[in-house]
Image (tube, rainbow, N blue to C red):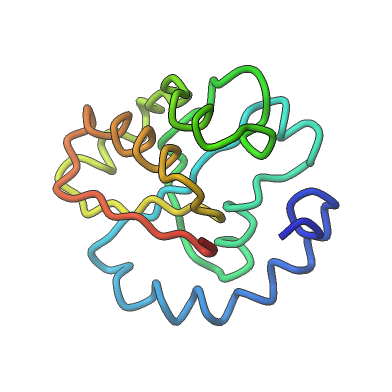
Length: 140
């Protein structure tokens, strides 16, 4: 993960392409994939959103339904208590609301540590009135 996410070895996303395709293809007909967004600062520093790249490498469609407006220290530098105290970093991307209303949404993240990121993301999506929200994390 460090080589992919921190060091920027984008080619590593291809290692997961077949597995992700096999997992998500059966549910794409009735589900919408929503990747966890990264901050503008992380996007500028890294040059890519690691979750979006995983989905793109697998040829999977997704909806950019959330913005990450979080500020401050990266999660990797926080301990469990600090992560659990995080305030809501996500806002809903309103053009995506029509795609989410009544839909089965699958939030996709790369790494599950405390679950706080996914809880915040699900909470931010609730105002779009999805029929169901599920989560998927590549690593735990």
